[in-house]
Length: 158
Image 1: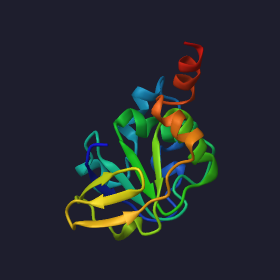
Image 2: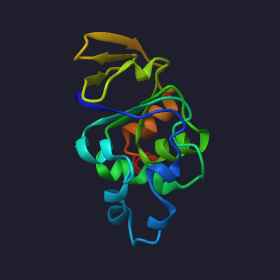
Image 3: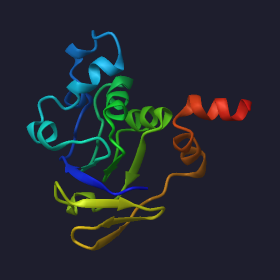
Image 4: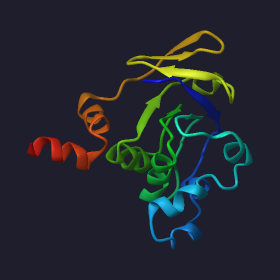
């Protein structure tokens, strides 16, 4: 996987912070995507497609809003590295093909650091530190590799 710039957020980032409920009336995920993290000035200022979100515990808590993970994928978030994920967000993101990585010391990274994710390591290219990560189970990795559950179904039909 290509390196990306880290955008570091805190604990308990809920789906309302990712995408406010008032944006759900927009006609498509593409129309909603520019509003991802609209109240996080740092994200709005420095995010570029291919960057990696790094967060603490309970990322994606709150509602079961599938659009929260969909807008992050649409925006070009390449991966989300966190100490832990809310269960429903985790499955929604995997089913859409968004790569999620659990790493107990994820927030030892600083916004702007270049990081690279390998199979079982997170390498901070800026600080030259390596951190062990928990790889996805093979059946979930297959979903992500196919771009989501729909892509996996298409592949199985071929």
